[in-house]
Image (cartoon, rainbow, N blue to C red; front, side):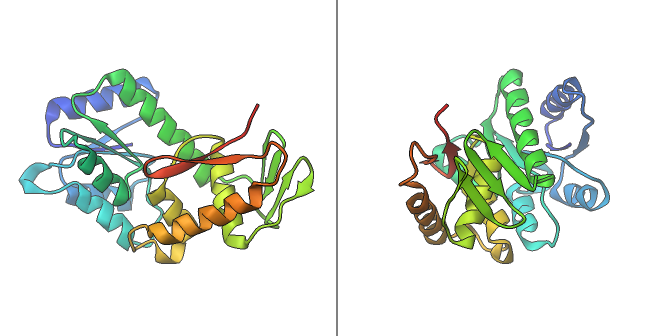
Length: 227
C-alpha cells in the first residue's frame, strides 16, 4: 500500500495501521514520487492527502489515473479539507472513499479493509457470482433469479455484475464509470449515462418476486437482497 502524505506524523500513523493489518507500506510526500512508485511496484491501495509538499495537489494523482493505460488501485483520501464540496470533488475525480483528518485510527483501518475487499473482488472477478437466489454468470452474460433468466441489455448486465460482486457494499459512481465504460474512463463520470443505465437495470429487476433492489447513495450505488 502507498501513503502519499507530507506530514510525517500522519504518514507514520497510517503506516502503523497498515502494518497492524499485516500489510506493508510505502511512503512518498509528492505526486511525482507516487507516480514513480506506481509504475514500478504493485500497489493494492493508495492513501492520499490533498495538500502535499511543494504546493502539490493530491487530486492531480487522480487526474493522472484517468489518463494512463493501467488499472488504478483504490484510493482513500485523508484530508483536512472536510466540507461536503471537498468530499464530492474528490469522489467525482475518482477517489473511492474519503476520511477527514484528524481521524480515529480504527475508522481508518475499517475503511482500508473495506477498500481492499472491493479491490480483491474487482482484481480477481469470479466467472460466476452466487448471492442468495441471484446468480450472475459473467462469461456468457446471464443473470438468474431463483433459476429463472433475467432479461436485460449487455450494459445493464455489466452494471449488475459489478454490484453483485460487491454483495451489498457501496460502489462509487467513479468506480462504476471506470469499470463499465472503460473506453471513456479518461472522462469524468457522466451522470446522465450512469443514471440511464441504472434506470434500465431497475426496470429489468422490478417485476422479480422479492427481487434485488438498487439503492442510490449520494455518489454511488449498492445492491440489496432481502435475506
